[in-house]
Image (cartoon, rainbow over all chains, first blue to last red; front, side, top):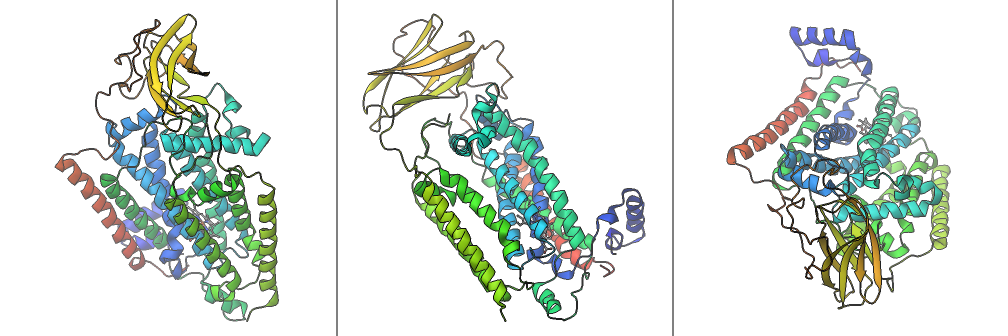
Length: 362
Length: 207
Ligand code: HEM
């Protein structure tokens, strides 16, 4: 198997790699990497992973200055923007990377769906992926509340409504669960401890399964094998080349986020005013917004539940052995229908005026 | 060629999902938007360190009418003067909580045809909880109404801010900006080199 030793050519590089690998067993992580795995569509998961690393690093910096109590939270963010060492830039990188990661997660999911890579034996990894999608959304939601501006406060209002909708199961989302400790503090803990830990554990499982199954063959090659053709090649590139390529994209992402942060800072809205609703949620939650208008707050709970349930059922519904989009017309049409619907809801929500759904968050 | 099974299964699944979703949605109470709102006031935050400020917002009140805002607790009363509701029956005001107010539970009262009450928890300034990350623009320095009745109807006001709050990118010297922009470019370039060379540096083609 090709390792970093073969990428870092030359005697010194090779010896250094061997010395490190002998002690840390890094080559044990390697798995066969086919050539197509270095295409952009197949490296989106890797870009997402490096985006997560960037968020980890910048998040630790921000945590040094953030104050998770209602009376000081927003002010501490103003301090981060105005005074903390490199605060505005680091916060910008954290925020813009989070947005990019949301896009790359969705594109990664779309690639897996398009190429039918959720099929046997990768059903479980698809489900773990859904868990990762949920933690990504959870991080974006809690991050929005932490700002404690009008937008964050309204997001919290929806969090509390969710507690009501869930009844007894919603205790964690309710401010009454721990009256001595402001709910902002608990959402902060979710943002910096619970969700990152859950995400890390899921990611370990995700990667272990990618290593176990290898990256899926190109759909056309896989289908040929189903029809009695030759088995697709599992190698062609190397794990190290794959990793270096991911890291390259990660650095580009970091550079781009830094450049954007110098011109466009992460938003911080006005101090929250209880009892009014005048902001719209961040774009990834925006498709839910018209549903909330039409069907009431309950849609905020049922629409995501239905969406995740439908996604979870995909590998168990689409059971033909074929993976090419051409051979799965119904599933591809279904996917496109869902994407178009979400797009239409997003545009509609962007064009409408904010409406009040809840009277009083607290 | 499409086999029968892969076509039938998704259609059945889709139909079942659609039916389940319709059933679910039709049984849900349609909450929609509020019609008549109950008069109410709310505070943000609901607990504050003495010397800080708190936002009070009223909704569902009679439009274009006056309300008196008062903080009361123990035998202390602080009069914040009057506010006027807008055409929608809403108002908002920022109240500077006196720095020397003892800690404890107080009430913010909004007095008009009806009296609306919201609870405010005040932490004593001396203990101050945790240090705030910047010298709070509202701590101590804010001219606040005294803790005695009727201080002359001071209109609730925003506490003076020593410097405008930064919400955009910081103004930077050309050098600093240059270094940061250079760093961004360097990172992106290094990334691009890795992306391109990863393919070329690929070693043995073994899997
Ligand atoms: C934090 C989010 C995620 C990260 C960091 C991540 C990372 C990765 C990586 C690095 C791979 C290797 C191949 C590739 O890059 O395409 C991969 C494969 C895979 N991921 Fe994810 N992923 C995430 C979310 C998801 C989601 C949301 C799904 C779907 C629901 C998903 C399903 C899969 C599947 C089925 C594979 C195997 C694909 C194949 O072999 O072609 N992942 N993931």
